[in-house]
Length: 202
Image (cartoon, rainbow, N blue to C red; front, side):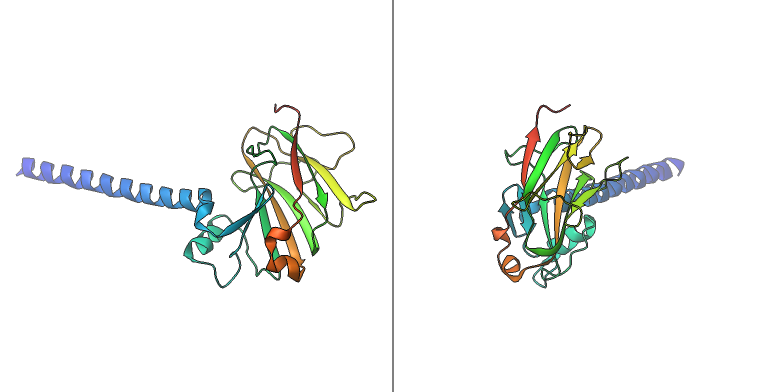
């Protein structure tokens, strides 16, 4: 009798472990897809920047809605806000926090805009100088109307600097609030800010 109970207990334990393993694999693969598989969502590439064409719209499918929820992006309607994400520089290399970059461009056609640096877990970097993003209110513009700033582990002289300590992946998010109707209709018409690496990575 005890041998039969022991065999039953072993079968139950093996079954429970297999079930838990299947759940872990299922949840892990789902999160991986939602975080790392942008091809599931209709998007457009503008320079180094990518925009999801359905985020915040009634056309968003279940993958887009789930990705928005998982990645913590509060996606409003396109007439209110547009989001452009860059995970690589203009040369096609993945953005890294231990590299210095210069980002420059002209003010987007929107009521207000900002560019924020995030670590690859979509949390802000520790910035002792309190600079987490650049926006249209504080950006210094040239006589031609262009702006520029830098990100990276080391401050560049004379530049507005977003510190990105550590050695990990990073992304830049460009938010446009109340973009002009022409840009809403054709996100690909954005004059995308350029992202250029400065020197060698640390």
